[in-house]
Length: 121
Image (tube, rainbow, N blue to C red; front, side, top):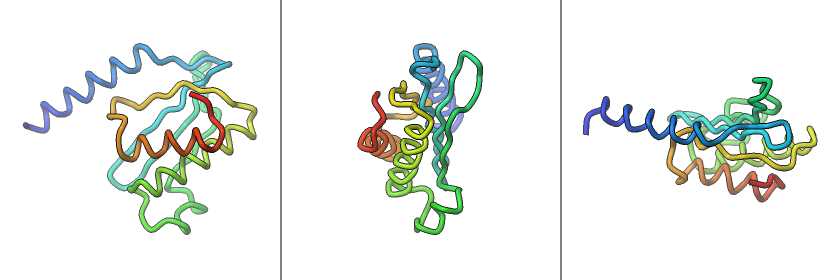
């Protein structure tokens, strides 16, 4: 399968997911972005278009603890960190936006760690 076909399928999945997932002030959106080297998570209020909380495997406090920023261990650490920051900002419930990625691997690890740390979705 060519890269253009894969990219088109990914973009289609992403549009389909984002059509249904919308962050409100009571339940903001937990967005996950993953690259080959790192994973990022943001909690976004779509009504005003602001990022309320963010965490990434690029942050110095996590980089010193992690061997790599692009594995499941890093995703779990980012999930715990974003959940802790969300609780500090009085956010308990979110809607999960996997960004067109399959709920598998690093995306799943981040989601499960966030749930264990206290986020509801």
